[in-house]
Image (cartoon, rainbow, N blue to C red; front, side, top):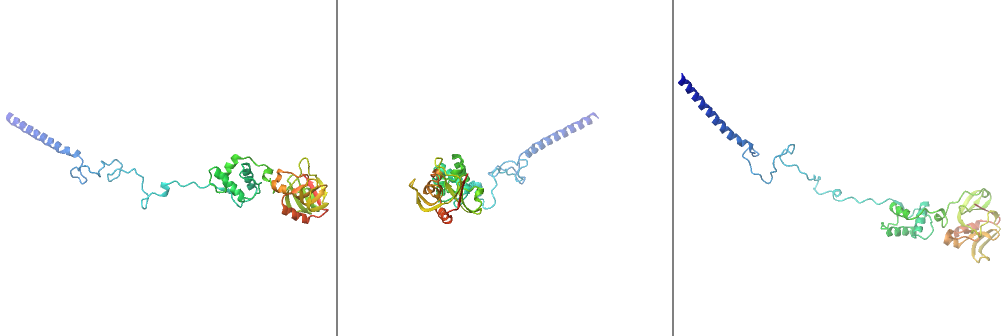
Length: 301
């Protein structure tokens, strides 16, 4: 019995050794599974130029690395103009240009006079002289010399000048007339207003024409009140001052409404010796033809 038992033990030991040997062999074969295989499951392939390594989690399914370059636009692949260059800034808006007129143009001209780019008194018309003055001002300051007043040009001019006063704006006349004096509302009247420096020719309260006028200085003031034309002299010459007084219409002593070449040339920079000066020769000629001796003259503030 003992010999039989011993035999069975030796047989079991041999079986155990065989199992251990088989397990070792399996371990040696299984160690190859940690090496990478080819795309088709074959043997490992040496890395080539197209291989970039293992695919990252969440990466492209084909195993290639995600590109960081910007995507090309659709089409021929050439970059768009917007991508290659910045669009130029639009030009500043133009406020006034040749042909415009009005009070704003007077202010522009008055300010150009302050910086010696314009020498004539404001006319309220954007004429060729104004265009040339604006162009010169722009060129001096490195701005495009268009001759048109844009927002940039205007701001530069504002920064170099002061707000022009009333008589800077109307240095050569052209100012609006004030409301007529009540004494001018009946009959045929030369209605002269010292405040607005205007003369209205009125008949029965209706204004037929308006002209700018100039008066005497503080030493030779123009008299105020209600008068009448008592003498008309087309080619009059003053014997007291030896000066020409064309289209003279006398209303108070030696004081008359007449044309003044000095007023036409210098505007309100000068003064009369008491007369009412008119600078528009065509207008005073027409007025002289209409006014009669005996017509009323009202001079008021």
